[in-house]
Amino acid sequence: MAADLTGTYLTLDDGRPAVRFSRTYDHPVARVWHFVTDTGELAHWFPSRAEIELRPGGTIRFSGDPHMEDSTGRVIAVDEPRHLSFEWGGDELHFDLEALDEKRTRFTLTNVLSAADTAARNGAGWEVCLAALDARARGEQAESRPWQDLYEAYVDAGIPSGAPVPGTE
Image (cartoon, rainbow, N blue to C red; front, top):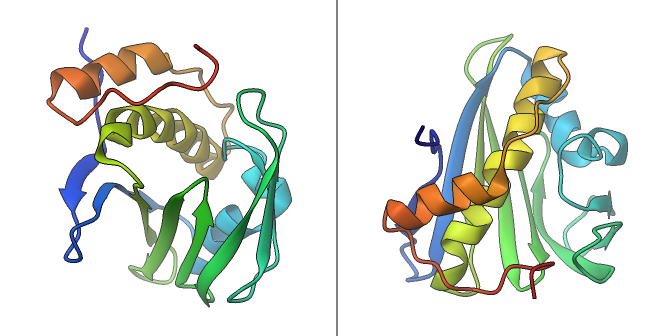
């Protein structure tokens, strides 16, 4: 059975490669903002523990990922409750929230990649993470999604691949 892929590979106007995901949540924008900025909420879906100093130039501390060293990043921009972007491991993550009405929010995650060959790997990883966020937003327990199947589906779809996969070297 083929995996349903929700990410899109694209080249930004400035020429950088990226993968983008969009979701609609039945929550007001303030609640979705909490999902993407609160350390306790991030623990339910983000791949590393992330402690964010929520201001432009602020520090983000990443820890707890068994496949990566603890590290820090820098907050690029904050426009509460509509936008957060920060650096992470050479990439940039952009979270954009748009209130569709008082109870619904469009969430868009854009992972600006440091190298195009990371697109399939990161796309598969975000599929797993966002499935957990989707479940959290519904008040359900997340079901485990097989990363390898998603990765193979991205490769089969022609998304750039070939970057090392942490934890498999």
